[in-house]
Image (cartoon, rainbow, N blue to C red; front, side, top):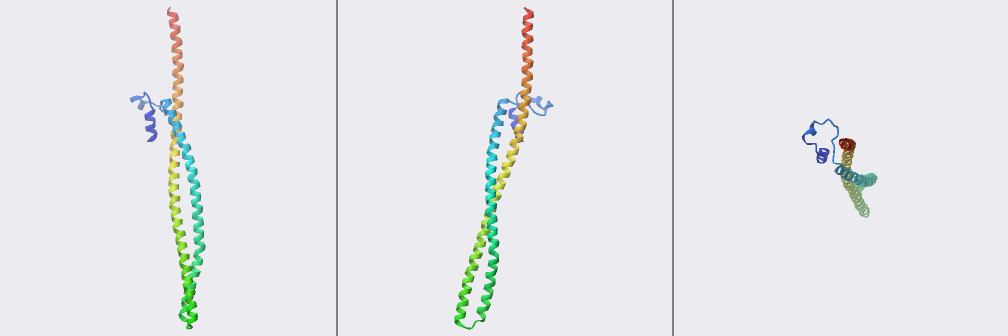
Length: 194
């Protein structure tokens, strides 16, 4: 669609007869076509740079996500051990009759609960970061996909424009050769008619 609009702007002098032509590529205004080729080429260079930067950011986020997941995975068994100790301490606390031992057991249970809370918070924090980084990475992947599509479309447009420029130049060269022959014949005719 975009290419049709681009070519429609560049076409010259074809009018209604264009639909009847059998050429695979239309003829274009050479100056406008070259400007458009240059513009699309510069845009492609920018898109390639942006795509490279996006790729680096995606890889950095992927590494952060992996580190976060590994950190969370390492903490889960520890959290399970802490929770198991909570159960042991709670059972032991219920069976203790000595007041001093009960105080020590309660202090250990409180300390273990605090450790459990810190571990659970850290796991939740790592999980939230992983989700946030995953969302950021997906946005970058989406942008890279858009850039890739634009790059492909621009490249296709450039190829078609270059083909139309070549065809127009070939037509221009043929016309110049015929005009030179007409000028030569006209000069000969003028000389013969004198």
